[in-house]
Length: 552
Image 1 (cartoon, rainbow, N blue to C red):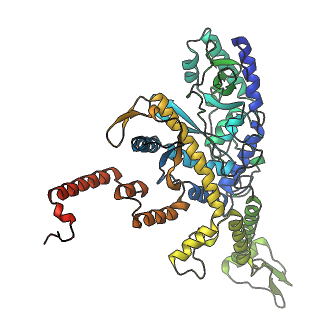
Image 2 (cartoon, rainbow, N blue to C red):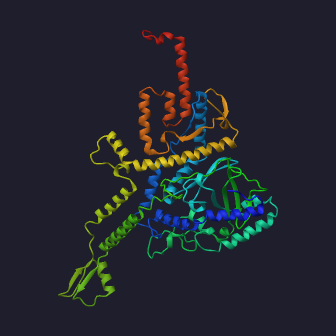
């Protein structure tokens, strides 16, 4: 895109591009609100199900395809380099791994995987602040792309993130601008006026959908909530937000535009309605790292021609609804077994009071010739098998057989046999684990670029040769080491490393890098000390290397 040169033309142009990116935001917000109700209640209307398998399934699948427990990174190169460069790359990979762990980026990415499975996509955003590299998750309803039929950031002309600032944050950003006081008053007035509007794209809805639980109704009468939207007005089980807090939030759009002149992304920040925070004085620049977007993308369920992907719950909603109805039927019939219904034939004078008294006493006294019939419907004999069949269908659709659910499989009597069944039963999970692994590696690559550009921190290679991250060759690639992001590959990795160790292809120090274990650094130091002592002993007593030089 070609950006306008003058500030007065840039503002309306940027507002128009931002609106184009947010064209589907309202519909997607309503859809995500409905999905959130399914996730936490197992129903579209907020009436909590007796057994909600939606949230359980999404959480279980997220744990299978990504886990931060043993996450490690490695660096690879297109060209061949000597050992000194490779040792520096290994030190840089350890730096990325430790940065992710210390800054909780690995935990954020894990939560993002759960969110992406529920809503289709999640956008982690890297930020370099005065405390170092950080990451936060941008929800899909707060993000927009210029062309939704293009699946990758690289194919987009513009991106838009919608956030909310409190008055102090806004003033900090605009206080040095000409006419800052008037701009501040106009933004506050617009925010208060806009907070009274309704609809899925209002400030209240955007804030609440991200941080509040859906309405949960456990007892009748149920209150129908269209689309599972969060109610912010009344009721103890509903989210409560003070109106004065909502009215003081200022909506800000952060626009990232591909600039044809600079051949880089340009950052534009606009507060509602049309207050330009950045750029200043035609400073068209990338506020993160040159040529790098701060955003990653987690999208386990890709859909060709759709940027937002697909929710994991789409195929399970009908079955969850059927399970909910069956369990409600069983609940009603079971209640009737304890509070049975009787018909009195030929017995006069039966009133509600007399009926209750007879139920409390536990016996009936009827007139001569009268009869009592039990009208209580019995539970169908197949009710348990019917529910089991529904749950099996859900597991089949979800891709979890018994062997993947931690349950035994008939005919399996050996661990090797069980591992073979797991490999053959999990290709769908492995495919999605690979997708998330690539998403993780892409964000780690951007993390490395941010650290290399923002930090002038020295690292040391194997021979204590000092270097900066920015001094590594440019043909690098950051990868997830040995599929360590997914537990489903853990057993394969351990078997492969064990085979290499038995074949003598790796030494003891390499095993410490390949096997996840605590206190790796101190164990590596002790190993080097032991190797040095052994080398010294051999130098002092070379006869130990000869065949007959055994010590008695």
